Structures are given as structure tokens and as C-alpha cells.
Length: 196
Image (cartoon, rainbow, N blue to C red; front, side, top):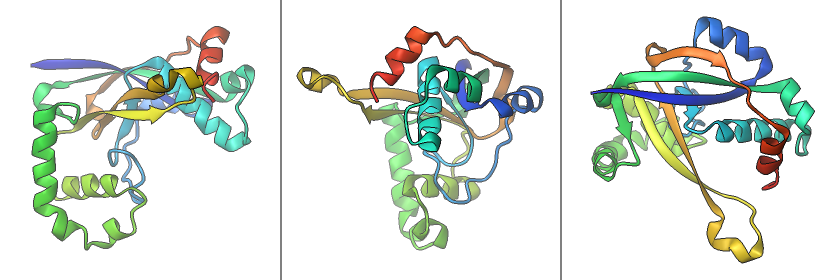
């Protein structure tokens, strides 16, 4: 079955033209620091890509960026990810997650002694990258929802866990219709930075 996902990728303004003209450059994750291993990352929601940009710029500035600063330095790329359902490793699906866990358990002993695992910043990324390198995972799209804890009113503590659904694309042949997408109003910006 054909699947199409709209994805949003936060990046520096200076990268927009190259990405839109040449597609994403998929690089190896040599430091094993990316969540789901090497690949181009997209959020399912535009606001999450903007939030990524806010965090990146906040780290550079050591403070939350102002609306104009964010607009001048960062932007979002929107793209269509087109594939077959058999290309997707959906780690939000319990059956697929179980199969993935079994695969990891099968090779964990061998892989955990490798220098790329021992020295990895992110052990999950290291395992995924090593499984791909050894062609033990053949699906080129990984979907996963991550839970982030956000600042909330003390009376709303049960709402502090915020889900962010992501897709990691391992091969740019699945990425189409790439363009800059900037629909960030001041009100939307304010609602995002409120939680910082």
C-alpha cells in the first residue's frame, strides 16, 4: 500500500535553498548522536519543527530567541515522504516494536562490544546504525513518537508530557515536493516559547 507523509524539518535559513534545490544530503551518523540513527528528520507537526528551531537558536544565544531573530535565522522545510507501507519501521506500533526489540536482543551482545557502540553518544542510535550497516534492517523510514517533558502550571502536572512524532528517512529518494514553509505568526511563536 502507498503511504504519503507530510513532514516538517527545522533548519538554518542558509540551508533552505540547497535543500529545496538538491534534496536532503543523507550523511552517516558517525558520532551516533541522532535519535534514530542516520537520516533526514521530519516532524509530523509544523509547530514541533518551529520548536526545534527555537531550541537550536536558544542553545546558540544562551536565551530564548525573539520572534524576529527566529524569523531571520531559522526556517522550516516542508516535504512529502512517499513510500510503501513495507518501507516503514513504525516503532509506535507494538507489533513492529516487539520485532525490533527481538532483533536488537539477538545482536546486542555482538554489537555492544564494538567501539562505535562503546563510544556512542546515543546507544539507541548506535544500535540502529549498526543494524543498518549490517543490512539487518531493510526498512528505510522509521517513525517514532518521543515524549518530552514541558514546563506547565503546577496544577496541570498531568499535562507536562508532550508527544512529538518524528520520521527519519534513510534515503532521500523517498523525499519529494520540498519547499520552504513559513507560517509562523507572532501568536504561534508566543504559544511555543511560553513553555520555556
